[in-house]
Length: 222
Image (cartoon, rainbow, N blue to C red; front, side):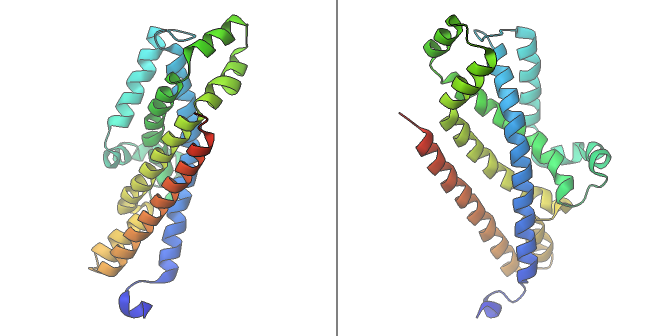
């Protein structure tokens, strides 16, 4: 029955491509989370009215974030080819896609982090400052926990974007489900392969969205 519906699909190829997509999404997602938090905190703290208001630093970080999150991902991959080859040693494979995925997603998430931090009650921040709370305590005991629903929600959106980015990266040799859909499906005119690869991408996206919604709901104390 399965072979009749999908005559050109090989399960071993599908499993390998799915694992490669999950690998790219997980590793780039972890790095994006850390870098996004750091950049978002820097933007929040140095912004006008922030704890360390500094127009020059904020402007530099803001411009860099805006530039890299505005570049279309497919163009960003091409621009980063020299950097990727130097760092990874190749421009093909799942590992070669990671630099572009991280550079493309971290600035995007940084803006979401900044927005989430701005939602924290300023009265609570001022009260903490007046009590002489240390910066590390303020960040890890108050700012990040209070904004955690927004941070998780933003990370959910970012992970879904990374799945999409990884599919685009697959078209130019990064492997994964995008590579399977394009090379084995589109180029060889195997519509069944393209269909199944697309369905697998949708399944991954739905799982990420569902999981993110569950965690966000549990963290939201309102």
